[in-house]
Image (cartoon, rainbow, N blue to C red; front, side):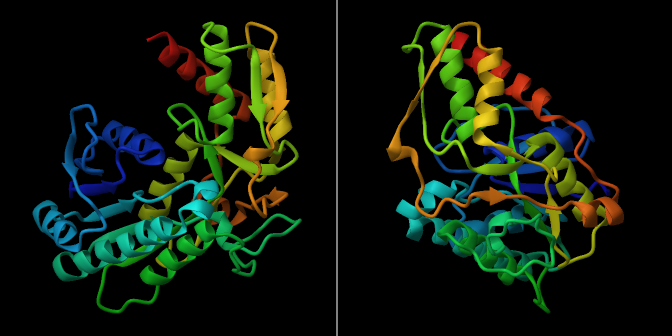
Length: 312
């Protein structure tokens, strides 16, 4: 990688934050965008900028000031369940926001390289491991918004070149408790601290998900942008699907006290996909990436993070 500025949109988010950690460790100069109103902690090697990606003029001005050579577009609405209730917001943030970014780059830095983290949910639901050749037919508003992001970036002739990652579920320390595994870990930490009764409310525990540590995920992002083929999608996944019940059981085994599990029907999603499982053969064969961190290591780190945050 050159010494050109690398832009991370959504730098205050889960994947964006871990990506910044990786880029800073590699001594790459980073500009990170965050939502107006947020106050990310200052850190060496990172210039923070508040940018609303729904404001085209603001995006263009920021791109003109930053002149990024590489862009990781991590900003966006990331919650599948919330997309059912906030469909318009999800589409606006993910689709219109991406359009503003790509249009600004087309005008200011058409030679920039851009990574768009799409999603496994662009694929048609399947009971088999999904490859990049699987049919594209999103089953929910979130998946639709991510497919639209891809389509905005692919095939442009006068704009920046775009690389596409299709991450499956990723998890790890610092994840929002609006996501299931982090929610379990946070509740366990609060129960251990005496901040809530010794019970965990759960939704569908039978769903099976392909989970990758977020630190492995962002490493894949850099591998794709550095060495991948533009406009060629790459699955980012573990190749193993775990039942939500198994994730909960593993976390409960790590708890310091007995905890009761209570089913809450309100936590079920409409049209929840029973299985999301991917194949990482393409990215492994072509780019040499494979996940390094085990699910047990991720669960340990996630629970440790929640315990430290609860105690602080």
